[in-house]
Length: 175
Ligand code: ADP
Image 1: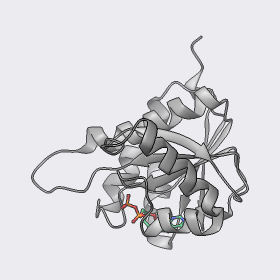
Image 2: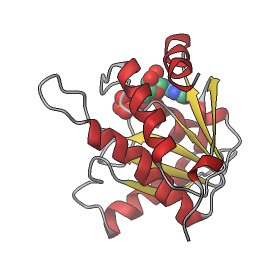
Image 3: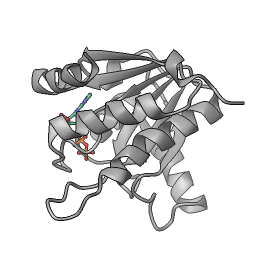
Image 4: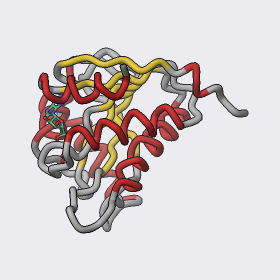
């Protein structure tokens, strides 16, 4: 059944995504699914070893070559105050190649997985804007446009921005 995308509320908070109480929180993972820095490191640190165990199982069963960029997959949220972590792999920023379709795909695929799970509240970080160096203003534009254009039963999409410049960039796109 089609959902009314207009019923999805976008909210912005400045803070740490691992402190959010939501049905699902999205991890800016890398393709190995074995953890990293930034959001990934924070999620595994606070969520505990159950998440990494689940990621290892996924690698063994389906993603031996890694989770492709732009795709998303869910695991337990371990000790986090959420039911699931949805791992998605953002594209590395490129000045010569337009990879914005892949960044949009991260948001769309994560919401598709959230719908499959029945998640109603989903928290996203600013995917690809850390180690992967995507310019914040452009990343905010893609994130907001994509979520608004996605047909989903998710009731609240919460963007959790780590610092004030990120919060300001998202505010400029949602205001
Ligand atoms: P990527 O590899 O996709 O660039 P990063 O985790 O390096 O992912 O960074 C993505 C964004 O998340 C950056 O803007 C970074 O400042 C921010 N960030 C880092 N830690 C957290 C956290 N605990 N909660 C929310 N956002 C975070």
